Length: 215
Image 1 (cartoon, rainbow, N blue to C red):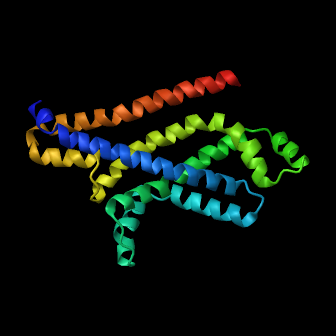
Image 2: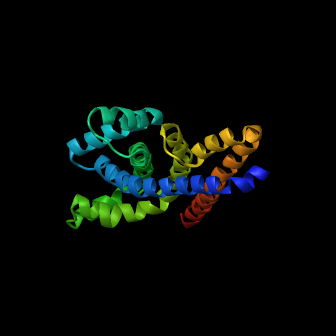
Image 3: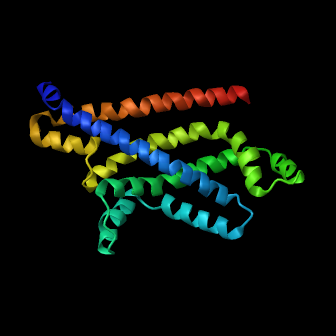
């Protein structure tokens, strides 16, 4: 256990880097997911096609390939960006379609009559979505959004393979320094991820039960 005392700063740095990456990606991916969801239910066919194409392309592409394109291919095309920023962009592009689908499922849970009533009083599509549909859908989308966030937490570990220092990458540094403690190092790293995902899972369960009661 001596290594835990000696390497606490490395673990803490990696843990905070993962939390920072998770928070920044969430703040970017969720609004993008809302925009994609609104585009997918839009009455304008071109918007639906663009949103559907983006969602299907990113949702069915391995995250590692998205990282590879941003970290290695984009610099060859003259676009040089920081590894940390590239990781956040890759995670945002990959996660936004999942947020979009979670939001769209919540929108579909709102009775069609609500939208028809809004249109009958002269509201535009944007006003109907903003003032009628999305507020009612929020209650249903929070649990699935938290589940996507849990998956996002685990996906941040992919960044460790692309020269970004975060929690998983810190395990590699510690394993090089304490080769005899490899198993214990990975157990500690796993516990650090659980410290993030378990509270999110409990929160998702609690909100799901609350939504069920309200229904």
